[in-house]
Image (cartoon, rainbow, N blue to C red; front, side, top):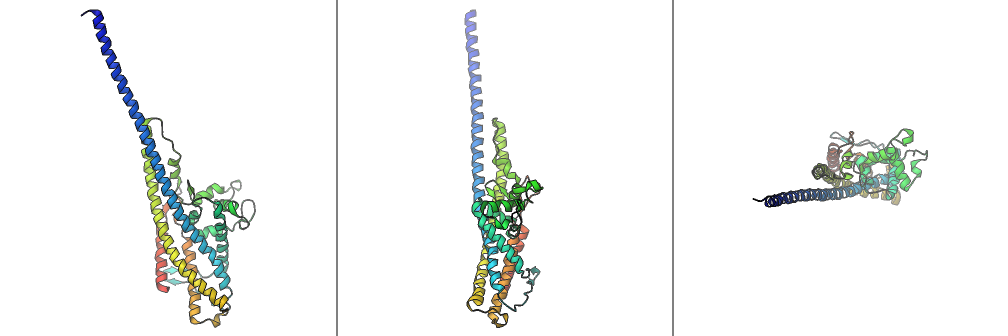
Amino acid sequence: MPLPLILGVGAVIAGTIGIGSGVHGALKIKEANDTMESAKKQHERNLKKFEKANIATSEDMDRLGTLELEILESFNRFSDVFEQIKNRPIFESYSKNGITLPQYDGEKLKQVSIGAGMLLGGLGGAGLGAAGGFAAAGATTAAVMALGTASTGTAIASLSGAALTNATLAALGGGAIAAGGGGIALGTTVLGAATLGVGLLVGGIIFNFTGEKLSDKADEAQAQMLKAEEKINKTCNYLARLRSTSNRYYDILSSVNSVYQKHLNGLTSIVTLLGHKNWDSFTEEEKKVTENTVLLVGLLYNMCKVELVLKNERGNDINAINTFAIETSIAETLSIMTDRF
């Protein structure tokens, strides 16, 4: 075979191999891009799934937190009416079947109701999850702490709006950073640093995926997406359980509050409308209404003390739902309501 022909054939073969390699390379690039695009879209879907679950849970937790604060604030009205009754007996604390409710303490109720009122007033300037944060951390405790002193030396009770919210968060964080405390940032963490607002005490795991960007390398991006997806699914499952628990507790609390409000209205009518302000002049029915109202106040006070979430001390994982305390509170509440109402 002539040399030119051999060279020509060789060039064709080499060209064919080159084209094949080029096609193979193009296919690999396309596959890598497809993998990157698929990982990116799946990551975005996962984040939207988390965001949806977080908003829904935050809203339900806010509903519970707001109800708890409203109940605590109403204790001020109860105290005002109850303190007008002269010669009233010292109501013993409820104790039955291992369940104990606190004895009436007018000063403590006043403090809690004032603190709750301040927190309610500051919620308007707070974001999604703020009220839920008070429920998660125990609304009664948060209400008491709201009566403290801000890092500026100003009584928190004299503040309002965003200043009130920030001062309360700083107080929960142990005071101003300059004074050795954790400041607003730590206070926010105490209440629950969720990405869409203080409130859920989800935990540090949340920050491991919400701000995460996928690698430019296809295999790494896919691996990162799957790792983040696992965390997101874990967090979404947690949020679903927290939301379910929150709604269940809200239903029980709302039911008890309805009974309490009826008794409080009845007691108010007895004292202010009928003018019965001496215990000795109370009928047996009026005494029963009074005693039951005191009991309901103690029951609601205890219910609002329950921390729905226990903070994870490691700070890099999901916090725990306080299942034992919640279930105990629900069981005790149902037992008392069955026994007395």
